[in-house]
Image 1: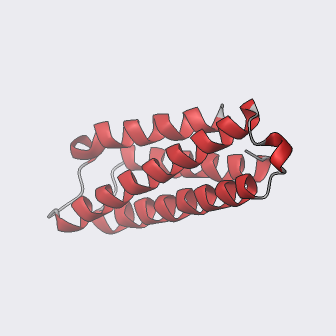
Image 2: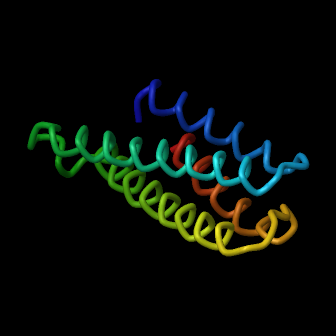
Length: 115
């Protein structure tokens, strides 16, 4: 993963950390939608970079790491999408109700950044 994508993912983590502060439903949705969009964009860019690697790298450890990154980021994006849907259907936003989901997503993104 390149520096630019790592930087975007760090910004996503910072945004998700803001959910711990008191925020209303509209602000929470804005944060989650931005995070989902950025994570999906990083997954797409990582997949494109993987697809453009020379064949000689096809069986390398770096290639395996990139494949894992794409998978993890795609999963995190999907989890964020479910979280957005749940938030949209809720009467109000409560961090406690989504805390375990957010922690799972954060850990997946951190794992990807440090891979």
